[in-house]
Amino acid sequence: MDRIPKTYQKFAERHPEVLAAYDALNEQVKSGDALSEEECALIKLAISIGAGMDGAMASQTRKAYKSGIAPEKLEQVAVLALPTLGLPRMMQAFKTIRGVVERFEVGEEPKA
Image 1: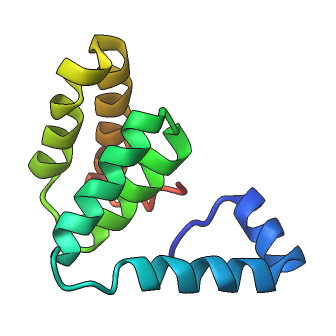
Image 2 (image 1 turned 90 degrees about the vertical axis):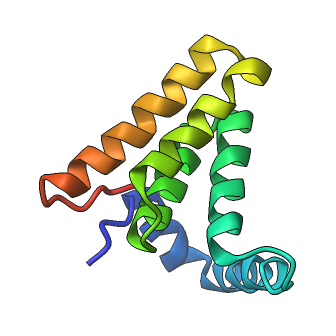
């Protein structure tokens, strides 16, 4: 079972209609046929890295890993950020991605 962050759970309890609309929007924007599911997942991870959103990075990593995307591909997304975003942002992304992957590798479900 997914370990959903408590803040997300509380928001879902208090604003289910907003979350339902958000989920519908998310599905709609992914409904085109130009990109594969894997490509969409990697792009969403890259966007979260570029925006510096650690929680989103962890969440996108968790979702991508659970969908079968290899850790090496997830790490490469972080490395690709280096020339554009710089070493500190790339290292933070790499750390976040590795943290999520390592928790899966030891049998824990990351909560991001």
